[in-house]
Amino acid sequence: MPVAPCKDLYIYYLSGHLSFCEELGAGFIGNWQEEDSSFLFFSSPARRRVEALVANHLHLTLEDEYRMSYNDWQGGHMTPFSVGRFRITTPWLQPTPADPDSKRFDILLDPGVVFGNGMHPTTRDCLIALQTLWEQATPATVLDLGTGTGLLALAAARLGAQRVLAVDMNLLAIQTTRANLHRNRLQDRVLGVQGKAEKFIDSPADLLIANLHFEVMKQIVAAPGFILKPWSILSGLLRSEARFIADQATRQGALISHSWVHEGIWHTFLIQSG
Image 1 (cartoon, helix red, strand yellow):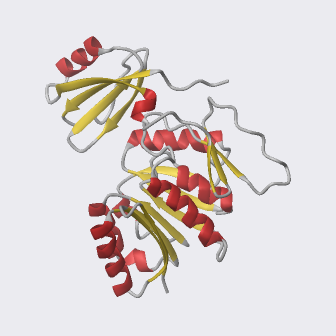
Image 2 (tube, one colour):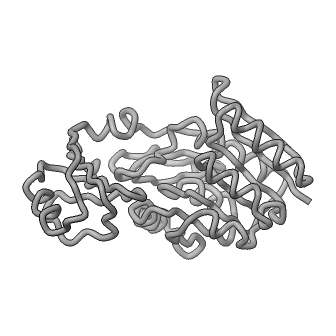
């Protein structure tokens, strides 16, 4: 049986853009790239290797290093959980066999070191929003912006979407998504691509899913392609941000079909256009 990626994570924070990583030896997990910084993940100490990397790339600086358990990084011990008809489990935990006659949708998810294990309230509310939508419509094509580990794209495919485009600007996220597509044998219906969300908003789709930072969400809702989507699920919004996005959407003629609020903090919208 597969095991968790590691017990402990060794994380090295570099200032400077590192768009690639040459072979960094045993224990190297991946590079999480931000605009002007990089986070290198290892399953064992690797300071000397990182120092050698920095010495060969003068634009890089080793700013800090951290050690934490894998479970702490993921926000707690990962156990199988259900959200409505969805049952999410990891490859290293034995899932409960589904009743052949049940309508349960099983999703096998290995988040690696990428955020998006399904435990955040916005992700859970998006899963509920997907099931709510499928009770009244059957989107055939889906655009998932900021896909992370690919969980929401996988969920849309499990519900019956025939083509899903899963987009994330971070290469490590897309690599994780693609691995999860293969684990669930959905690589023929879901395509993971690297790119900025705002560059893909005009792609045609029956359903837009966006669980994103507010600054990106503002660009998404203002884009011409937003109102052309018959349905949208927007999440990751704090209270004042949610008011702004709801106002922008309704000004364009969209209808807030359903909304979810977690503990008065996180807001999720199911929006109908046209």
